[in-house]
Amino acid sequence: MAAGWSGRTVTRARRAIRAKGQHQACWRCGRPLDLDREKWHVGHIVDRRLGGTNAPSNTAAECPPCNLKAGGRLGGKIAAANRRAPIQRTERTRRW
Image 1 (tube, rainbow, N blue to C red):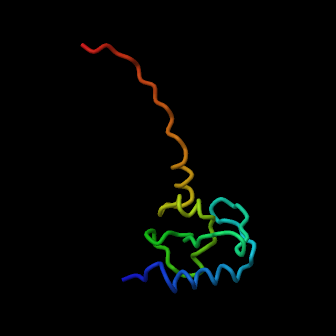
Image 2: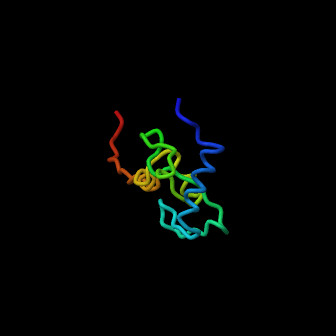
């Protein structure tokens, strides 16, 4: 069984991300983050359900809106989900 994503695993990932520096960018949207002054989440670069691991090399800092919006989808799929579907016009026909 795979290790869960809580407790020591998250603490280890947060420590590895902080070691890269105090100022980083959200890896999904690119917004600058100050890890000491702002709230931030640890996100998986390759989602675990798609074959990613909990290894610190597979984690990155994310702003909370990006991480919560992700919901297990990769970055490109998030952008596609945010777009509205084009309005399809249908021809009016008489009902007989």
